[in-house]
Image 1 (cartoon, rainbow, N blue to C red):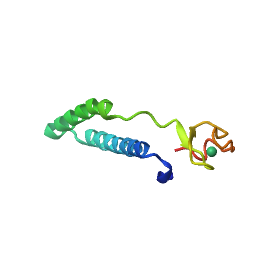
Image 2 (tube, rainbow, N blue to C red; image 1 turned 90 degrees about the vertical axis):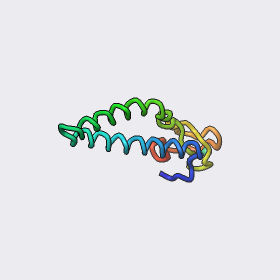
Image 3 (spheres, rainbow, N blue to C red; image 1 turned 60 degrees about the vertical axis):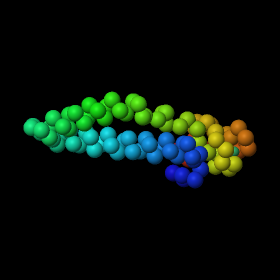
Image 4 (cartoon, protein in one colour; image 1 turned 180 degrees about the vertical axis):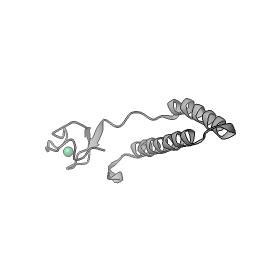
Length: 96
Ligand SMILES: [Zn+2]
């Protein structure tokens, strides 16, 4: 993925999604490994808090637009032809 083609807001959302995904992994790992006693109780409380927090901070879904490889303007993710420069491009190639 070429970060320089992302708009600043979009870049922030990509980073936020990555951070959330990473934290989700850590919380899941912690809750699966903490068995019995105080550790398990704390892990359970943490998992609960995390699950309440995620919907509040979760950014919008994955972007539905990508950069045109020819003119770099934002076009629909599934577009096969740029609406600005009319060049053809593959949806998979520039998707991010
Ligand atoms: Zn274009």
